[in-house]
Amino acid sequence: MKRKKEGEREESLEYFSRALRFSFVFLKGLVAVLVLYYLLFSGFFIVRQDEVALVLRWGRIRGAGAERILNPGFHWALPEPVDRVVRIPVKKVQSLQISEFWSPDLEKEGAVPQESLTPYLHGYCITGDNNIIHTRWQVEYLISDPLNFIIRVKDEKALLKNTVCNAVIETVGSFSVDEALRTNLEEISRLVRMRAQNKLDKLESGISLTGIYLNRSVPPIQTEQAFNRVIKAEQEKSTQINEARRYATNAINNARGEASQILSEAKTYKNEVVNEARADAEYIQNLTKKFPQGSQQMNTYLAYFYQESIEKVLINMAEKFILQKPIPGKENELRVILGKQKQWEGVK
Image 1 (cartoon, rainbow, N blue to C red):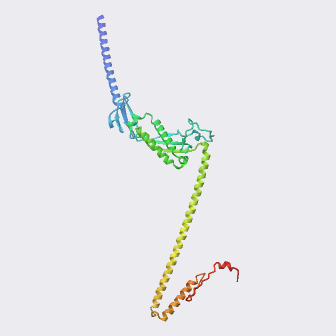
Image 2: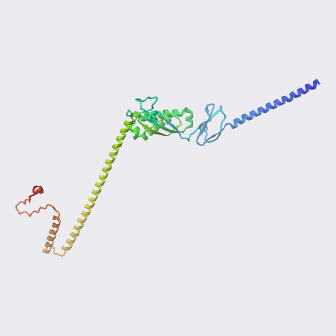
Image 3: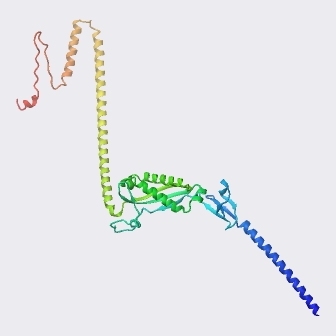
């Protein structure tokens, strides 16, 4: 009986041992499947259309050359911490506001101007003629070189702020306060963008500036009224100059119109006189053909025509002086009284 119990015990232990071995094999297989599934499927990722990706394996970029940049589509990498996928939005234009040269007092309604500006509280720029202004800027950029960007840029926002601020200080310092406030804003923005981009290119940052805009440019609150008076005076000056130019233009145009009319009338009168003279000459030539050359009839007709022509000329003249033919051997004398109307005015 005792041996039978021992046999049953050994048989139970054998079944238990087989069950443990089967469970251990099953667990090993399950763990292997889970690990394989994790390695195979958890490493899949998608790169969107507006970005590229780089895979860092233990902190170093995986691949060589152009293969390091993963274009849009499906890709696979080992799960973290072995591989880390870095996505870079190369087609997305990003924006950054720069308010380092702006004063918070300008945002407050009815703010009382302080006697002076505190550098760490009130941002400002100094112009080329030693005036102070406040400016606010907007920077738009995109990442054009992902490799250089990943390798060389740690904090893109800080890099852009420092670079653009240096360019603003250098650029605004070369313009007068009037140019920086009103007349040359586009040129200042263009120069700031050019200088900032040159600095980023020297650093090989992989960042391209698509635009830098001077959103606001105002004088300090302490001098705002003085600037407004100057602007108002310049506007009045400009208005008066424009009115004077319009008056001059109208006067010149009227004078030119009158001159053109006079010239046209003169040309018309000239043509009438010339045509009339040509008609008279043609008429005389036709008549003189009827008389023999040097005959009494010819001389009589010419004398009559001469007298008729002289009468037409002299009738339109206010002053007439008729000189007789001088006597041979004697001088011909002519006396002219000037200012006759004033001298004999009132005498009958």
